[in-house]
Image (tube, rainbow, N blue to C red; front, side):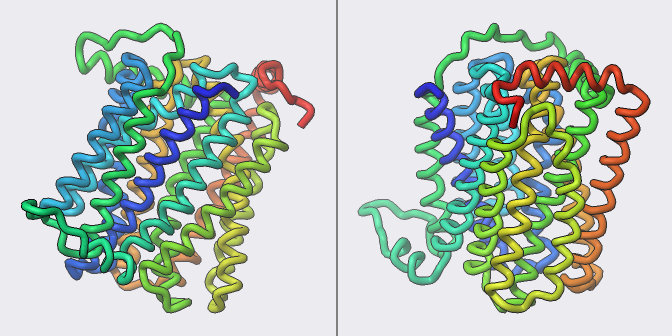
Amino acid sequence: MSSGFYIIMAAQFFSSLADNALLVAAIALLMQADAPSWLTPYLKFFFVVSYVLLAPYVGAFADRLPKGHVMFIANTIKIFGCVLMLWGADPLLAYAVVGLGAAAYSPAKYGILTEYLPHRKLVVANGWIEGLTVASIILGTVFGGVLIHSRVSGVLLHFDFPMIDTPIDTPAEAAIAVIVIVYAVAALFNLHVPRTGVALKTLPSHPFDTLKDFARCVRHLWRDPLGQISLATTTLFWGAGATLQFIVIEWARAALGFDLSKAAILQGVTAFGIAIGAVLASLWVALDRSIRVIPLGIAMGLTVLSMIFVHQIWAAIVIMVLIGAMAGFFVVPMNALLQHRGHHLVGAGRSIAVQNFNENTSILVMIALYSLLLGVGYSIYTVILVYGLFVSATMGMVLLWYQRNHRVHREEVDRLLAFARAEDPHPER
């Protein structure tokens, strides 16, 4: 890999590090305001609203400008959202502004890979970026938990600037101030992301034209025999993954007696497992064999059910690493296959925007259902039972869907798999 690839990786690492630390700090901000527990998941809800509402436009925007410029603008928006939190804006609304930046960032982050690298390196590159993303999740969640810890926040709050009166008076606000610095570091790397030389696409002259273009891209991906399967699996996976973040926090509190700081570290343990799975997938799973990992999604849902019976820290760590490893091994090949099909069907930026639209619609629905279950009084153990069975059942349905596609459209599916194999440098994996 060239030096430009590692600059892209560094930019992604620091931006994702800040994203994950900020979620912990924002939760602490709500807890500081004595918000009810069912309101906490709505942080994620407000964060991803922009992904859904702006999906028709951010993909076209990412293809209109150099990807490094798009990522710089996006990180600047994230910094603005953090500043709003510090100045007393409603945490949900301020976090929605950060989500706006994240929505703009995502198509550029993934789209640049398909522009900068040959398709035969996509699985390896996805292993890198997912592995680093997960490393940033591990460190970000732990970092956020450390920042809000009483000892660390006490040190941060003792810092003072002569002649300047800052609005930083609580552990959560001190954490957010540090996170702003991390976003700034990511923005500096964005300025050095290399140009890919790919021709920039013009924006449609009217917003409605953009909407029609996006609808066309959605249809293309959902009608493709492989695109629809990879899109369905990643859509379900990210909805389930976002919900699991909040389930782990509540479960750690109920089963292990953890506070938010310790629960955030347990989330990091899960992310460590994802990193292991992501690396193994990049080494072992060829692009044309990505479909074979779908049964892992079924197994992951069933493994989640074991959380109901865990009350020891060591057992919790083992389960979290195992769930994470299965998730990482599952999502990297499916992401690579989706990007491969999307790039050839609709273009890199638009493909990622369609992916974000579907995945984040899933997050909105699943987060709302999770919050509803908590709001009406169901215990976290009942929620875990419903969640695990739902994940296993839906992944099983997707597997049956692929088997039907291969049976009914065997010639076309085999042709598309052969095309994927031809672009993979290590088809023998």
